[in-house]
Image 1 (tube, rainbow, N blue to C red):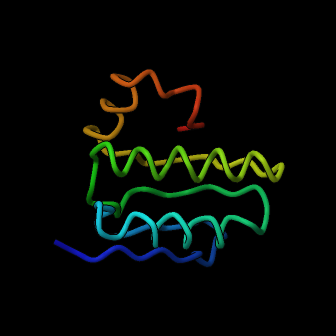
Image 2 (image 1 turned 30 degrees about the vertical axis):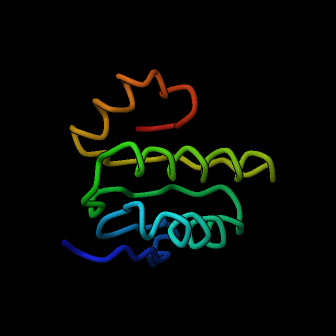
Length: 98
């Protein structure tokens, strides 16, 4: 199980890696919010290993907090499991996913 990390790639996309879990969710939330403060951005989830409700909660919180600042986050490369959870929870309106 890989530890969570997030960085901004050379193309400007945010790239979270590893797992978001109960223990690191507060730090993941803060790190993502800090990096997303620069303006509209894409978030590439290809290397994110978790696809549970904690992960979904952090992604929704990132989007909501960014929106309050007038910033739009667009999520890309959701895993099939995470995409299914988003659909099951009817969370598509809360996440702009491609």
